[in-house]
Amino acid sequence: MTLAIAAVWMFGGVPESANAAGASDLESGPSAPITPVPAPPDAVTKPLDPPPLETFVARVRRGDTLSDIFERNGIPARDLQLLIDSGPLGKRLENIFPGYEFEFGRDIQANLLHLKYRPSREETVEFQRIGDRFEASAVVKDPQDVRQYRGGRIERTLFSACQGVGLNDQFATRLAEIFRWDIDFILDVRTDDEFHVLYNEQRIDNQFVGFGDILAVEFINQGETYRAVRYDDGKGGIGYYTPDGESMRKRFLRAPLDFSRISSDFNLKRIHPLWKSEMPHLGIDYAAPTGTPVKASGDGTVLTASKTSSKGNYIVIGHGERYQTKYLHLSRFARGIEQGKRVQQGQVIGYVGATGWATGPHLHYEFLVRGVHLNPRKALSTLPQTHPISPEDRVGFDSSAALLLAELDNRKKSQQFASLDAAR
Image (cartoon, rainbow, N blue to C red; front, side, top):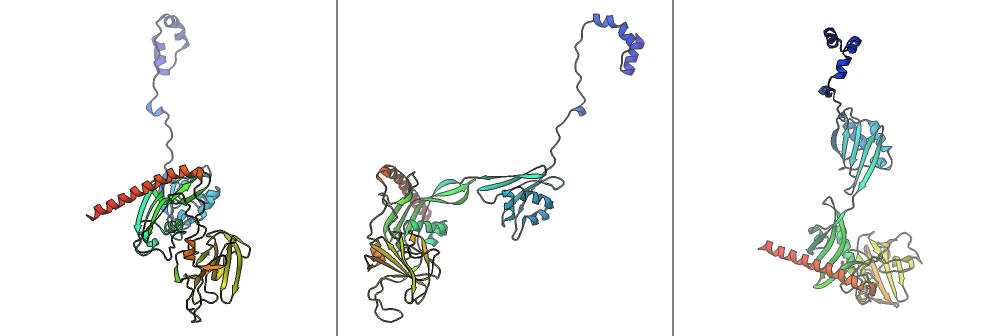
């Protein structure tokens, strides 16, 4: 028995004779619990660590291509080709601009694993490596509207006043377009005129990305107050209206071009600058650089688009049976403008020039009612309103307008109080 035990210790096994001799003892003895022996620590299976990933950001310099950036950072050219071949988003990598920032992720062999960049504040494009190809995805964030207010006083121009309070030229143009039927921004604007505007500012991740809709606006011109509110009827009709629900849009524009100056007014006894004799000036001359767009002042049909020695290139538009407008000394016509062409208010029909009897580039503009020449600035102020708020939209409009104008007034007062506090 002793030898058998020794054999077990030395060789790790039990001889058959020992099993036979001790079988009765093992069967008759108490059953002992078997406790599993844990494996040594080194034998425990661990998950493999992911390969180390190096990330870095590269900024596009002037004149850079993505190939230049890859070469500077030691990334294989074949990875760039795989990116471009990944689809439409990959093709866009062929057009990159200074200031773009690319986030790279690569392994220890410098193989590209992912690439991410933002072609705009709204969009993020990402490429992820899968085997020997890249999958591309794009996420576009919708900007959030944040209600804002600005107010300013005009010292020189509407543009400079808007710039002074953080509004760009495009915003100034949009503001002027709301009142263009009531205020001639070429002639009527004066020093100390004021504007107050409530609008949406568009933001992504709390960063400014653009200007949204103008919601309510007030313009004080030579002591007279003009107010407008934006209204969406929910049926595709969006426009600006007075607080009483009259449309800001009139049948004719106050002026057929933007931001010029009047060089010669309507005058039945004017001395002609070329012939030095008294000749009626049956329109208004707007001095502007050659090529300045000229707009149709109302919806209508082109009756004439021709040229004479005195008028130069000129256009006549009929607005129904009652009204006509004329545009003289144009450098050229806009594409498609010809006799019989239907045009819409604000559509570009030609460009300022100095053709015909003209001493310099300007637009000569005439306004006729039943064939009789009238001073455009005076005649347009007497024309009836168009497209007021419909009866079915009246309740909704009144509620919306009241809220917007109340907020505009409150913001305006808050700014005035803040200015007073700062002056103390």
